[in-house]
Image (cartoon, rainbow, N blue to C red):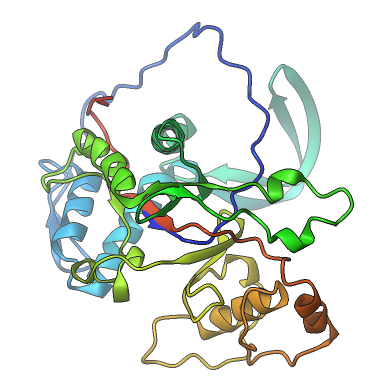
Amino acid sequence: MIKLFPYARPLAPSPPRPLVRAITHQLILLPIGKQAGLKPVHLLGKIRIDPNLDDFYKHAVEQKEANKADTSLKKGLKCIGNAGAYGPLVELNELKESADVKLDVYSGEHYHQQTIREREVPGPFYFPPLASLITADGRLLLALAEKCVTDAGGTYLFCDTDSLCVVANEKGGFSRGGAHADLGYVEGADTREFAPVACLSRDTVIKISNRFTSLNPYSFGGTILKVEDVNYVDGDPRKGFRDLHGYAISAKRYSLFEGKHVRKIVDAKAHGIGYLMSPIQRKTDKDEDQFAVEFWQKVLQNEGISLKSAGLVRSSGHDEDSRKFPGRSRTAEGILQTIRFRSRSRGSRWRP
């Protein structure tokens, strides 16, 4: 996924990590044989799959793409592809023992024994070596995308599981900076907070996206690093790009919105507030979580970004502070573009 966001402050660069000096071992996991008695099934009662002939997860991804018009079916196949490909391989279930059980604990080169009453029992498909390769492959794809962006002179707001939010705009150049200049007097402020942020052009981001076409193992064509629909007007690629702004705290705690002062929130992540019960009754005709939208509206208001008042909480003295210090924004002038990997690629070669 590539997301385009016009106002985003990337996190301060981390110190360089030491390079791997040498690879001493390489392990290859190869399947041997096929389980007997496998029979065709219908996923969600609609999609026929024959495990004797079809690659299960490849087929699920291809059918999700072929049934995009069916929202319910598309989401179901996405869940099967994402959770089914990884979750069963690391499934652990808690088992309470009636008496103390001695447990062998291995951690790196360390070993000890301890007594427990509750232990974790592996699920029927538990196989961590394969699960670790799935997540490692996802990290590798993100590393390739990050390398392409930085080599082009750009940067990004954040990475998620399979996506990269690139700071970009129509023509490229530089943003105004990560924070407003009126905060320059703050004692101990990091000067990088006020430095201009490099913006790639949208055309450059699209070229980066297209470089991943050679990794596509599926029957449908195109790149596996998709430019997300949220980048387009009304989420419709036929209507052209729109300018989006972003405010990010971490990978799954961010909001995307139109207008410098939050004219409309188009994506409000609820990962950080999932433990709270919503005080708003969700409307059946809306797919969005209105509580998450109003929550982020209040956050953006308190940060001096939004001029609107959220309906959940009355204005307080904190809001007055935000008006006194309007530069308390974690956003910058630039446009963000979000790109997301359609799924894990297998058996294809990266072409630089």
